[in-house]
Image (tube, rainbow, N blue to C red; front, side, top):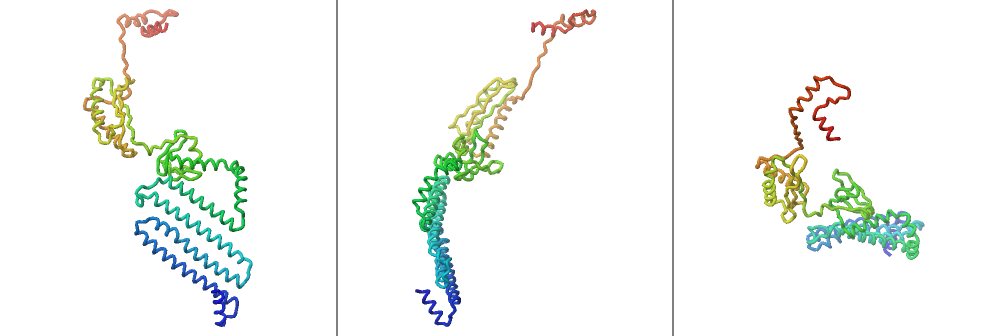
Length: 396
């Protein structure tokens, strides 16, 4: 009715050409749409800023999720009206699809708004600044992906129904073709279910350091997808691991350790074995008094073994910190204090040595080689030294 009224108004103003009236009407609709979209965007932005000062966090997420879809919805209505005017004047076949395009656009905008709201909800649930008990990032990411997938699949089915396709037929086709798809994409499905198991069992999450004794995998988890998990190795290289791999290998998660272990073996010279007891006792007392050593865990300092070149004792203790850099600083302090304790008793740390003891020969053995030199040598007579003769007798 409004379009007809505007058309009559233009005709009464002396604009008789159909093309001119159509152009003016379309231009007016597009201009009105642009102004309305601009005003709506400013209004939503103003409300969003006002909502940011309130304690309710979900109104912020809702307004932020709706800001762009609202502007596009206004443009969709405006362009639909402009297309209807063009069809009224031109009767072109292409404009017969206006209703279908409008329905698909409305469904898509609703789906987009819901997906944007889900993303904003994920940010709220994992933020310690916004909630008192933030949820685990990996869990929230998995739930968000499942919810978004459900919304998108539902939107696609609704769009297909609006286009005249039977949803029941599509579902039946999916049931029959699922077997063929399963065989063709078994690796893809294996990775999908592997990722699902990671999300459910949560052996690791984003930001944690993991490694596998079965595979050459070690680094920090950056992203857990449905098919691949991206790991940043310690040399800053990205490592992409198919999720199905985690269903068949063992995975260590050092990020969840409660302590780090100091386990060192120190050897003293055999000449210092008499002060081994005092050294061991003082080192143990030093560890018990160290503020960074967790005395609630196993703490051992004991004389361990008689080695080839040393007498050894070992240090076995746990630090309170799990930070890699701080752990090595504490370990350095412990080792340096151990050296000071050893030096205080005049002892020394052993290094590989070998002592050769020479056995002196008797006077009779010393004269034998000289007599052998003065006498003529007969065939078959042995002129070897007494030591070698004794070695031969030992062998016999």
